[in-house]
Image 1 (cartoon, each protein chain N blue to C red):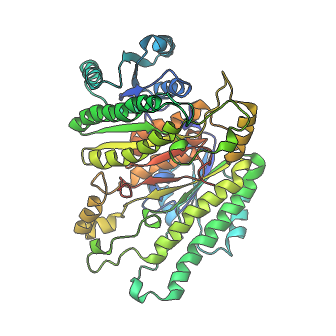
Image 2 (tube, rainbow over the protein chains, first blue to last red):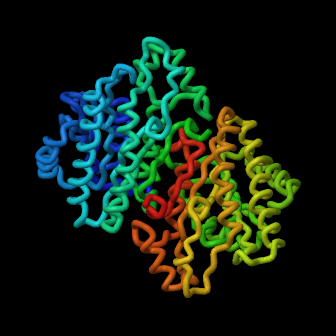
Image 3 (tube, each protein chain N blue to C red):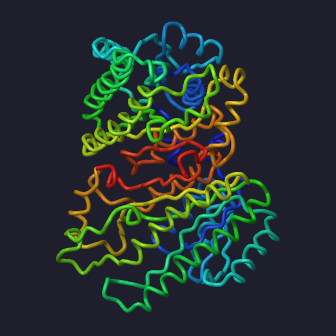
Length: 259
Length: 261
């Protein structure tokens, strides 16, 4: 059996699985896995399953931004679908969208609250349930803006530069990945994260072509990322292709952070 | 592997440098298994004849070419032979290494010999083939470095064993990692991606490492063990394939979490 076949018979959960990056990941997993559970905000996952004719994907509405509500929701999902073999956690992209000069501290705090405690709870609940099985692969999502700061000069008015609360939360995901990888390594559960570069959604691409050109110039490959280009990296980390890789931040940024 | 697999190397011409060692042989198997048309380039052609034969018997397209990495004319001749036979090169795996030093007290001549292959030969190889791929506007270079290019030497691992850690290795593997970033920038606009894989220590089932070393090494990783040679191929196939089309300039450790702690 080749490593990239190792999703056959497996169950994978995807949070934020109907978004710009999530949808292509969910669709590819649907082709390989026994079962995919796609979590997203009210109605989004259901719409994805319908429009893409996904046959192995169970859509569920779930807001993963409230840590207090997560344990009960996860218990219910485990009761319904069993403990998954893998998790792709995309739904961590909370952001104030505000300028640094006028960002209220409470908004800064709100982004952290909606990102970090829920990710912590999600990882802990699933890893504890995966433990007895002795295997599992969890893929989190950070961002190049958790590694380097956005350059305010490339954001034309009225675009606000990617806000500080977003980058700080994404930087924390990198350390959360390493901490969990080390903590659960002996249990055979691998934790890694994808650190994407510029993958603006189609709305931004259409509305701000000059900005897209500025983003492209910042990369070694001189272009923004296509959402389908996130799929291979996720599959690599989920499968036995990466059986000896844990605690890693896999950068998918066209070379943005290389220089 | 299904034809639709993003990890497929079907119809890709890959040149692998270095194929006689433990890792090299495992990489030949991984690349062949992923469907590559594989050319193994080595100083010692006869040492690879048996491996190539068994791969061919398994239905894989594997050829062997002789090359002297220390000689630019030899590298250019190899490039021209591969282009003449296959029409193009889609990727290279730089896995060649010269192990000329054992300890920090060795003669400087051993250091110079190491650099001849591991610094100059490495650069000459990636330039010769990088330029050829840039001329076509696409390609992928995967360099095999080491965790020992990322962290310092840990003397505790070797205590009481006959094993040593050679200083030149920590130098040229570290250099390989940052030259990879240079090359990613240099070739990026030409559509050639350049990445590096940094394996942790690999268990040798034929001549196992000292038991004390194995036990200590296991404790230094999060997965509690050394890598198996076959576990590196997944990362290399991934970086050669179109599954990693937006990845360039990265260092991908395959180290069981050794550098995550």
